[in-house]
Image 1 (spheres, helix red, strand yellow):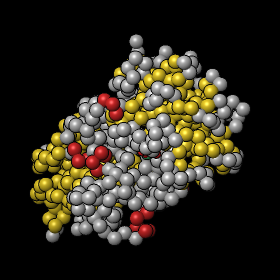
Image 2 (image 1 turned 45 degrees about the vertical axis):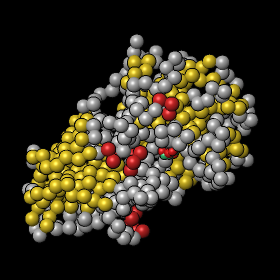
Image 3 (image 1 turned 60 degrees about the vertical axis):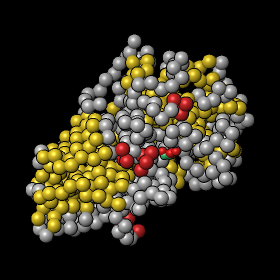
Image 4 (image 1 turned 90 degrees about the vertical axis):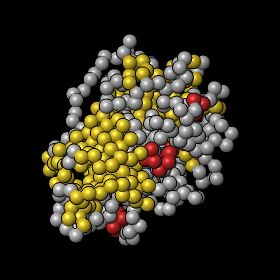
Length: 522
Ligand code: 6LW
């Protein structure tokens, strides 16, 4: 019996949405303040997945204000109708909901078609059998969360009829009804949503109606999926934000986000994409029948296996690498010279706010950062960095959760002498307002764990086993640290840890990084 190993997309790939076109499956996830945005994946057997591109590859498609790392692009939905792929999502940095279209999911994708007058986040599209298109999303404007639907014109990319509130979720006063998707099966309109919030209490619930505008009646067996009953020690937590896909043979699968806590409820890798089979009983979906929860290994569908050629994620040209913030045309602080050589300009603004006053223009600039996701519990990441002469420039290797939580191995100059230091930047903040928790630590304090002289061109390395981090320079171990504060449950935000190369401090000098090696084991 063939099987699928979860997560199918390890590392920070939250809010997945999937569609099938013939024998091909396509999947997109959120990308927040990273550029390019909305990664696109492809599979033919649901076992093997390859990244084929991004939807948002041009600065004009992804205006980010980079106020914080969890801004930008929230949950996308991917749908296909009559020869065209539609991706709808929300840019919370002042744009709102927008649609991009393509004939080829690998791109190119169109510019943004901004959807005016749509409240909330988590927009989705549904194409009915008569060719009509509907848009749904969530809305908090009435003081409570509710899922709504409205007719949608795919020529003008606008709402074209009455917006109708459909459902407030299964639980009485359900927290954060969101991530709605509508499906049609056996004459019923099914509305599947997430509720409970994307944290530990996350769940998936469903309702159905005979008309798309309701009245929707909740499934008596809700929630159809949650791991909150398993406790904080479960190996998979936060299950929710799901999307369903029907295969050619009539079987169904669900993709969803979930977390793999590390050494306690610490979500360093953030929310990853998982998959699980779904069966239907008496007109309602059953998730991973007889298991009732998402498991690391699930049965694969009855499809020919279709593995893809291995790609080298250490190649700086690989699709897994991201900028932080959208580089203005011609002012990109990151230059990929070759697969093993990237140059990063020491922009004035570090990715960690040091309280430096930033002009709005300064804030919009992309940061001197180029990174890839942490995808394993145990891994090493190494690179050779060359510090320029400019006294202001700092550069290094960072394990970054967000603006307020990171561990850095950094080269810098003091009175002309080159030093290396291990730095912990930490601040306990409310995950949404990013304010310091009452009684929490003061705003974003930095702690130098160790420093010593170093060569201007040094081999930097982080060796991570669970929550234990070792900092090495030139093969010498300098310091150790506990990384559990990097979990998003503590540090806040919607991201998962990135391993990044960075240059900052000003002077706009170029820093060379060579021979990056990431090796994940568990
Ligand atoms: C996503 C929404 C959510 O749009 O988090 O907490 C947002 N719930 O479903 C970003 O992942």
